[in-house]
Amino acid sequence: MRIDIEKMNSSIHAFFSQWVAQLCLILRATLFLIIYCIISNAVPAHSASTCASKTILIIHSFSPTDTWTVNTNKAIIDTFKKQSPATRLRFEFMDSKNFSDPSYLSSLALMYANKYAFTLPDGIIATDNDALRFMQTYGVDIFPNVPVVASGINNAQLPSADSNIRSIIAEKADHLGTIRQAIRMRPYIRTVHIIGDESPTCHSMIEEISSIASKLPQQINLKLTPVMTLEELKVFVKSRKSHEIIYLLPHFKTADDKFYTQGSIEKELAKISSVPILVSWSFQLETGVLGGKVLSADSLGKQAAFSIIRLLAGQPVIPLQLDANVHKSIYDYQRLKKFNIALDTLPIEASLINKPESFFIKHNKALIPALAIIFILSLILFLTYNNLQKQIILRQSKERIIILDKEVIETQKVIVSTLGEVIEARSKETGGHVQRVAKISRFIGNHIGMKEKDLDLLEAASPMHDVGKIGIPEAILHKPGKLTVEEFEIIKTHTSIGKDILDGSSRELLKIACEIAHQHHERWDGNGYPNGLREDGISIFARVTMLADVYDALCSKRCYKEAWPRDRVVSYITSERAKAFDPQLVDIFTKYEEEIRQIREQYLDKNESSLA
Image 1 (cartoon, helix red, strand yellow):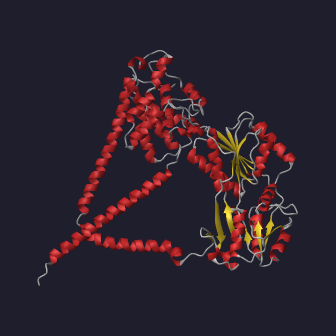
Image 2 (image 1 turned 180 degrees about the horizontal axis):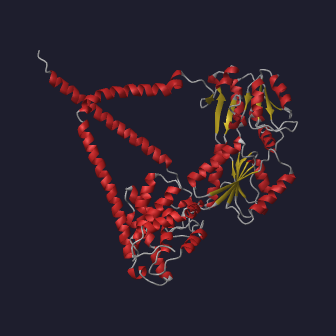
Image 3 (image 1 turned 135 degrees about the vertical axis):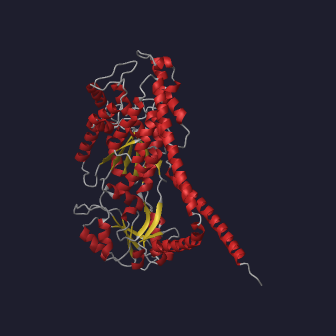
């Protein structure tokens, strides 16, 4: 039998070429899906934009280093960033764990009254019981008519009608769930020792625990432990018997009036306890305790932010929210092993911390890349032969594409610059104006740290700032005297006309030009036009162009005015710091005013004069 080797090789080559082409299509589709998911998740939902430009005051019961407070605060901030990014947040920390006597609270109330006398917030979030009690006592006097949402409240009750508290979100730890899970893990338990301190929050928790006693098996005895010193607590937990278990509430102050940082008492007791220690708050984990059905600060912070946003949007909010908490069964694997607790006694949804990783999970960072490398090398070996013959052609094609791409970019820049000069000419202003604005804008942008790519875009796009003037009647553009109110309103439309002209392009240069044309008359203080944007809500490209445009316009003679002297120009721009202009840009301008003046003179037309 005669075999056609060449034909066989051709068939094999065709098969593998087809397979590689299909693989590339699959990889491309997968990559597109991943990018789409990332972009979709990255776009914030501004569903509550009615809270824009509002100020929310967050009053925390505890200190800014308290873990529970930190997590609650982070959840509030993250929620506002996604739902209402324009909202201004202010924060106060009462530090009531360390200072709680009436004289301190009254002095705190006086300080808040003076601090917010003329700048009342639009809404208030009060976290934990101490902040709620403070608002119940002083809130109406200090913050009249300001709606308050209280979050993380133990033993929560309906807010009274004569207060400004609109909603209370209960911090409802699942004491019953935690103890029931412990009974399932250790059926021979007879006594649950409740350990807490003398804080008001802890007293509220003990009331909650007392209400669940009737729901437990009859043989279970809930026993409240007297407040002790740390040394007494150590002796107590060390001497417990196997039929006992400890339920440790958040604990900060011992009987000898010593304060302890969050989690430190849990660590000390867990080291020597002869029985498992149950907890119901996430911040108590990772201290050596067994775990439990824990409550996190994250859900409470999110619910508080959502509630105040709804209130300020005029939407109804439930006065007493009892179902805002999300509990998770979390246990420490090492403590389960120490106390011989079988994993199959845990709830099916339970998650474990401090569990040793399997070989694959432990080494997956090395194994997965290794397998990927083997596959890629195999694919490369196969494709190398096929690609060698195409390299020269591809390289030549790539070089031609790069050259063409550069030509397109340069052509765009020339067209944009030329069109800017045409618009200036129609306005009877010198063509050199747009060139000077471009160069000055680049200089300022460079000194605020813009990247080289952004500097190129800024310099190329800024000449288009007044492209909308193409739609303004010449009689108004060329009017030598002061414009009437009606004429000025027509002039103001050039920003929207410019946006309409440039909008819709996918080219980055034209996108930036569109931003500049639309926003270069917005002011830092929000009193500009067309949309009254303020501060960082205005594109940095527009802010820079605005300063450069105003500077050169004031220095130049126009049909309606003479050129201003140098000192008057500098004085005006300085006086408009944090009013019309971005204060950072004005600082740069002031520092480098001489260099900016030299740039302007370098690009003056022959018939224009330099500044005195």
